[in-house]
Structures are given as structure tokens and as C-alpha cells.
Amino acid sequence: MKYDKHIFICTNQRVDKPRPSCGEAHGLELVKEFKKQIKDRGLNITMRAQKTGCMDICEYGPNIVIYPEGVFYGKVQLSDVEEIVTEHLVNNRIVERLRIDFSKPPVEVK
Image 1 (cartoon, rainbow, N blue to C red):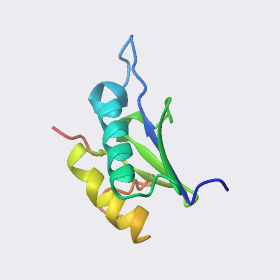
Image 2: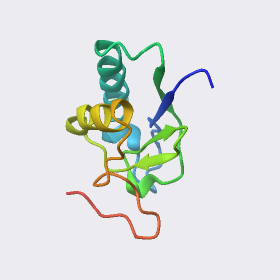
Image 3: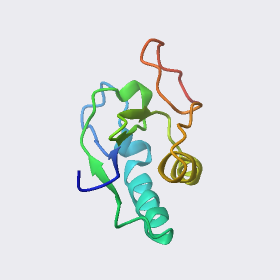
Image 4: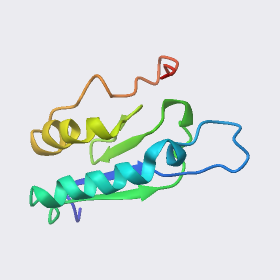
């Protein structure tokens, strides 16, 4: 693999709005913050954050997925980025409170 960790952040935006849209929720802001945190910590040689299109798990969004582990995080807020970078990217510990459990229906955030 080229990177030790690869972070994909959904930035999809829907015109017709039948489902929630990660991009409208703040997907691009999440991309910017992940890139900043990774660069500020000098991790940008071994890790990459980038935007992606729809992952088809919109009701759990805003969503990110981190590879190679394949861990999906949902309802990610800007305030969660530092914790994900510190815990998952640096210390290899999954942030369980944000991890999507696909066996359970998504929780609506108000």
C-alpha cells in the first residue's frame, strides 16, 4: 500500500434530497480539517485524507471510512476530527462511540 492509513470522507450532495446528504452536512469542512490535522502532525507522508462520493450509507452521515481497517464512522462532526486522528490514526484505537454498527438502525441527530 502507498499509505499506512487512507481516510475517505463523503462529500456527496444531492439535488433531489430523497435522503440525507453528507456534503451538505459539512463533508468538505471535514476533509479540510482532516487534511490540516494530518499535515500539522507530520503524518501526510504516510496518511492521506480525501473526499469521496456517496458510500450509500447516507442515514448514518456524515460518514468517513478508514483503510486498511475498513472502519466506518458516522455522524462525524468537526469536533470529532482531533479524536479520530489521535486515537485511530496515531494510536490505532477505534473510536467506538462513532463507529457505525450496521446491525442497528441509524440514530437521528437533531
